[in-house]
Amino acid sequence: MGIKVCKFGGTSLADSAAIERVAGIVRADGERKYIVVSAPGKRDKKDEKVTDLLYRCADEARQTGDCPTFLLIKKRFKEIVKGLKVDIDMEGELERIRERIISSRGDRDYAASRGEYLNALILAAKLGYEFVDAADIIKFDRKGAFDSEYTNDLAFLRLKNIERAVIPGFYGSTPDGIKTFSRGGSDITGSIIARAVGADLYENWTDVDGFLTADPKIVENPKLIDMLSYRELRELSYMGAFVLHSEAVFPVRKANIPIEIKNTFHPERSTKIVAAEDYDRTGKLVTGIAGKKDFTVIFIEKQMMNSELGFCRRVLSVLEHYEISIEHIPTGIDTMCLVIHSEELDGKLDVVLDKIKSAVSADNVSVFHGLAMIALVGHGMKNRIGTAGRLFSALGRAGINVRMIDQGSSEINIIVGIDNKDYENAIRAIYNEFLINP
Ligand code: ADP
Ligand code: ASP
Ligand code: MG
View 1 (cartoon, rainbow, N blue to C red):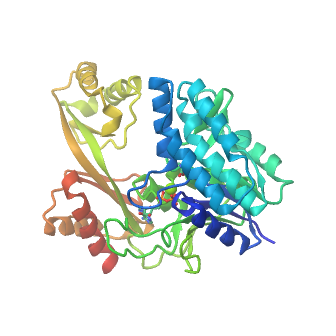
View 2 (cartoon, rainbow, N blue to C red):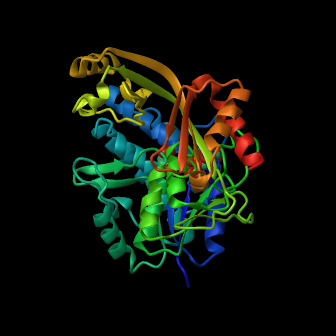
């Protein structure tokens, strides 16, 4: 019998009926042995995710020493437990959590992790599976860096004698306390567990039928991607296709485990395996499109910059000093652009500009706000002449001005920068050009 690791996302576990459905899915296939869960997500469009409520509790506790929002969390978990009729001391668990959020004066990572912790306790009780706390097996060092090999060893040792377990997603621990991955991080936990137990398949259960060729909130009924490589998956998820966290690619890739995205609300729909090391790419040009808004571009100009030794290093060391990470660095002969997530520069932009100017004695340093970036991803583009031409014609016909181009050094992507306001139209124009009539 094979082993499947299943991760269920927030909408799949938003209330007792959803959790009941998930229990049915797990029981329907005996190979579904290790289950990773998210915290309860939104029950409808206006609802709030439990994780967001928990972050709010931590902020309240830090500012006022109390967390009134915890009442909402209590209500949600009590409703879930009541609906499922599981035997858990939920009152006691909730009270201990509330006390610790307050006594830690709002430890954000601890607070945020409790949605996954409680949901895992609940699903484990419902299924009769063992609960294994992620804090015991997923490890970060003191500086907060994830320790993949230590984690892999610990998780392997802990799970090798446990036939069936439920594990909370999203967090692990440092020597000092709880630490979470970035938002959406339960996907990473699922991938880590899949590698540790040597799974045959990593099933990622969510609210769409699979990995789509574009964001379904922008393109109506985008086609499904039937197969993609780990590299394509990484590029698409990093560039904005958040159906799978971009860091979830690494553990399964190391162990060559395929990933399948499945729809909790339509488990009968047959989706294909979406990631494998290699696959037949015949006839495929663009595999998918993804993008993100809200970048800032710092444009640096200096004559003879290219022959000036240490120019790039001096610019980059300013950003390192202010702990700002850079997304892209397109360069020209006498120009260099830094494309940075706008939120990274919050409260730091003026000082960074001053420091760059003085570090390299630039002729000109200017800033452009509100850039969106869109990536076309696909192995097929490497050898196909004219792809960039088609892309620019399509954008031109849609009246969209291209502000920046970055033909990725990875050879499997082309990235264009456009105004935020053109983002949705640009995605649709590119989709129509490359995926309607490839
Ligand atoms: P979960 O809570 O299950 O982790 P997420 O909300 O994180 O689910 O991810 C699923 C969502 O990702 C979908 O509802 C969809 O709106 C969005 N999404 C964005 N890009 C894509 C894509 N290329 N393919 C599929 N879904 C996508
Ligand atoms: N609950 C966490 C979040 O909302 C992690 C996850 O859902 O994967 O980001
Ligand atoms: Mg997610």
